[in-house]
Amino acid sequence: MIKNPDFIDMLPHVIKRVVNDLKIEKELADAERTIAESQKELSILYEVSKAISQTIDLDKLFTIIFDTITGIDTLTIEKKGGIFFIEGDRLRLVSHVGFPEVLVDYHKNLRIGSCLCGLAAQNREVIISSNCTTDKRHTIAYPGMPQHGHIIIPLKARGMVKGILCLYLPPDITVDDGTVKLLYSLGNQIGVAIDNARLYEETKKYSLRDPLTGLANRRMMHIVFDRSLNRAKRFREPFSVIMLDIDNFKEYNDTHGHSEGDRLLVELAGLIVHETREIDLVVRYGGEEFIVLLAETDLDEACEVAERMRSTIEKKCATTISLGVSSFHENMLTKDELIKDVDEALYRAKKRGKNRVEIKTRIKNRRQNDKAI
Image 1 (cartoon, rainbow, N blue to C red):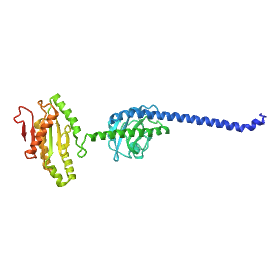
Image 2 (image 1 turned 90 degrees about the vertical axis):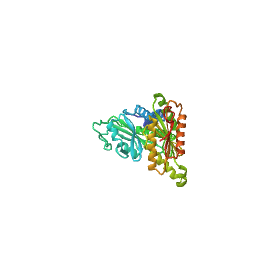
Image 3 (image 1 turned 120 degrees about the vertical axis):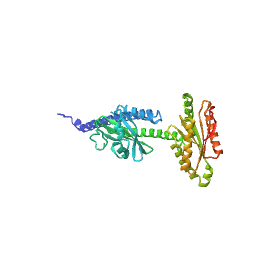
Image 4 (image 1 turned 135 degrees about the vertical axis):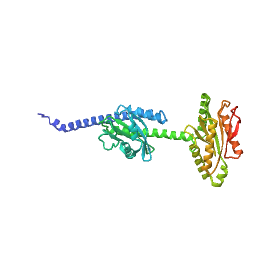
């Protein structure tokens, strides 16, 4: 029995102090755990940021994203997944790892709001599914589909969801709230990186394209021209060029206005492309002039293409065109010589009445070096 009245009086204070000390210890432990988790989260975000900043090439970026995310120790993620871009009311699968062909087919026309990926795009939220075979939100299934879970992350940039990152979990894996918070942050990081890469791709594409017609511009022409000419020289393959010009285009513009003139250029560009193959290159050379680079095409074949173009334009457009044709030959040394020859042929077509095809060649044994067809 405790007989000291002072101790009895002090006991409530002692108990209160012990409780406070325990409370402080718990708060310190919680704080230390929070700091450790924050440090781990910051470390992951840093590693991901460092990895995805290595390139601005989209295909390389996709590979880095998958390798980096699936390599995070704290996330039990399988080496499997896909990246979707939002296009209108659909999701387009742009990259994947480990998808069977049947799954790729299922995702070719995925509507926003459909299945887990579509829901994440619609709701702008991370979705965790521990087992998709029992998750009613998971509406896509195929024969032989194994049990699995999902982490679906919306990829955001400039305040909008730009895409979806679909990751795979082993079945019945739980994900805590701290990890979900981390996934939101990763989605923002990856979304910005992908958005920047897409903007870069668009800029690069338009720097090589004519903004009005969508055709290649001079810059792209010189790149492809050099490559095609070097190949022709190396493998002794035929290579031909057509230069064409719209007849009386200035008068057409003066009569109908520049807007109608632009419309005519776009229409004519489409008709020219229709008469070529995928391996050919149609270029808006400047103003109303166009150049067509014809790979693996000799002079006679190029003349046939030019005549088809002339006939098609005459029938379907409110104008006509004049064309010059020339072809690479061993007597020709440079790109400038070939452009000079085709330009001279076009000039002759203009002088000789327009709406016609003329050729110029340096083939010595041909009966005529300059010929109209």
